[in-house]
Amino acid sequence: MLHSLSRLRFPLLDIQSYCILRSTVLVWISLVYLLLSSFIFNASVAVAENKQPVVIINSQVPYDHLSRSVLRSIFSMRLTRWADGTPIRVFVLPDDHAIHRRFSKRTLAVFPYQLRQTWDRAVYSGTGQAPVQIKNQQLMLEAVAQTPGAIGYIVDGNRAGGVRYVVLD
Image 1: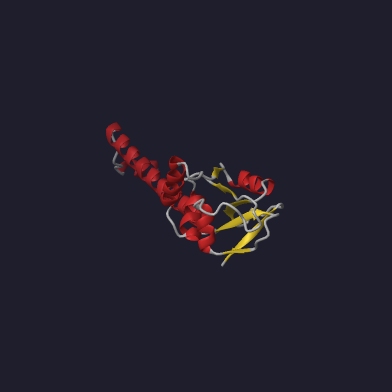
Image 2 (image 1 turned 120 degrees about the horizontal axis):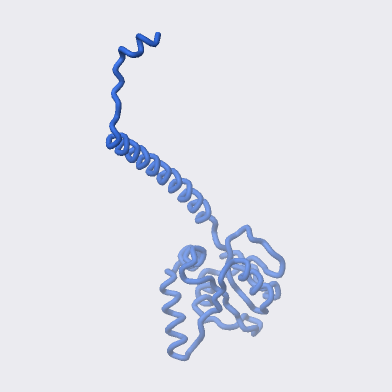
């Protein structure tokens, strides 16, 4: 048996060919890994982006339904008091936050940069103020729950006490 194997000629790789082959295989493995991880990441982002932001208000505010135009007026800081005279305190997430972009586009039907321009114009002209910026959804829930007349938004599913969920008319 040993004698028959010695007659077979196996092509041997020199060290340079071996290194090239090894690096090529590693590159292909890396590309496949990158492609799969990118696909998995994009799938999870797509699932998160399908969640619709909901408007939340302080539990003392007596509204369950608001129209898109009223919401636009509130979040553009043109409407500053509720019907009972309570000041409206508007809380928003940062401009670059995905939920803020989704809320602006889907709920208010305006681009985030348009909201920012409206706020900046009011602040710099001295005719109004910008909303209070909150870092994340948990802090948004706490701020709206603790502030009389407050309004904000979160992704549906983060339910908590002290706030009411507004239905868009």
